[in-house]
Length: 111
Length: 138
Image (cartoon, rainbow over all chains, first blue to last red; front, side):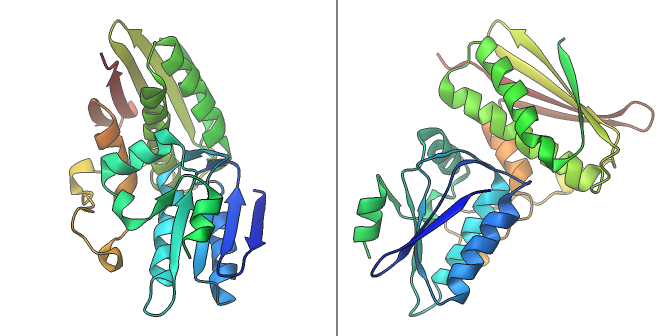
């Protein structure tokens, strides 16, 4: 899994491409863990090139959000979420746990 | 019914997904329905691999499909451990705080929410069979 991390003034963005499923979600988890262990709690997950997200991937995001949202820390937000992915998240009722933005610029600017 | 056999490895999830997406497209499902089908099958296959076979990659998953006038029927068969789907707790997210959210049962929850019909059948002799139906939206 190729993961790209970009650091901004008030947050970092993390981007990967393709599928996130049970075979590679642990790599995504490790990438988020490295950020939070480095004290980065304002994170943008750039989903522009993700075309599939299984529950294993959503659990990585939920766990990362739990870490980021502890008091005085920050937040994980999502950018450029594919419509199909967003619809499936809404159907199960998990969309309320993340702010979403149309693009990374807007997401970065929210911090 | 067209059928393809996959070895029960997480690395094969993308291949299973590709096979099912093509079937869903052949059945004339729209883009959102195709994604729902791919996701439900991925969750089912993951559960078979992780819980049914407990990571034993010598197991197999047989994926078959039937194109119907109003949608698609997908049948997954395996010889992993049986389980009681009714005993899997259904997660709840509406009105539940982030701290209280737990992962247990999310895969099965996705399957039930995304598919129009979900039927589990277990047989010591014939193995396990999961039938999923997704209908076209009009």
